[in-house]
Length: 477
Image (cartoon, rainbow, N blue to C red; front, side, top):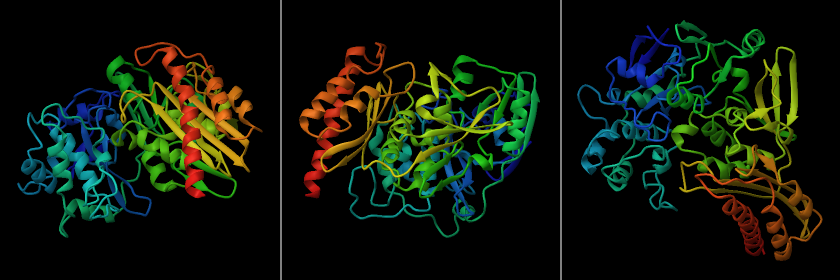
């Protein structure tokens, strides 16, 4: 096994099966990447990975190296902060950070540099002299590219100034030129060490055959959840099966009947490929963790964990989505509303994995996603509410409400849905629905919020949704 690091081929020798990429890099004297949190929240470990851009070329993608299994780098290509400079000359990102005073203790700076460089090389970054919001620079730089990077010393203004001061890559920029050639193909990997075995099958058929033989294997894709268990909880298992690069799980199709998103499509890829065609998901994406996490986290993984506080399930429940499960025996489709059976428990059998998420068309005309959390971005929700409603001639023809954080599983607000359907969409109906939704689920008190607070937020979400829809109708009129 080997990996290209900063243009140099390096052997992945002497690995532990559960070793993460950050530890491997540092053991190879590439110590620019740091460990700040070991759970993907600080970005000190950020590196760039060459990934397919969907058009035959490559895109430099920033990721948290602390969460990636080192064995998954087999055959891949990465750039660390040490690889940004050329022949002793600072990279433009490094120059701007230095000029703006964007580094003090320096611990977070290499991670910032890698995330900033990935945005610097984004092919569709388009300058705009007068950005419409405060989160984009005149050079087209999207500050959300840095949303997963934390700084505890300098403050963010000089870092932002450095980002907004960047121009476009020069014609002789090697990392920019690299984007014109394909990203490395996934390498079939079967690695055995004292602490376990790591396997990346060549295709879905091989993966399903292996799972039929080893039903207790842990299946991972982006590793944004599994990596935390390995780092923080010290979890170790005999066999890990990586499905993140299986081509059959990396498709995204849309026809007149449904949108089907492959389980191994990352959230960033889904956001880019859908291009706003599923408005409810378009509202979820920016609020889901950080860009560093979304660059690795997958649709299937977020559903597959069975977490009651995941951001994607409430939206998918509101969209009436279903889960396509595959095994060596064949495929079956399960409505997402019937998929979760208990806390982190689902109907998925041993030997099965999620192949895709299917969203039926047409989509509801009125949608909204409300995430209640302590921070605006990069936080776990206390409550998540998704609405998908059709109103015909002022009357609610169909209502779907997905809820997260109020029960042992993500749930539908069935009682409130039934109350809404067939009634006029008025302030009175909204008030009745707000009272109804406040009693849905079994919200508990924990360190994020009290049960009373969660119930109040459910109620307020309905009133906010009504106000938003009424405002749109007035604008339309």
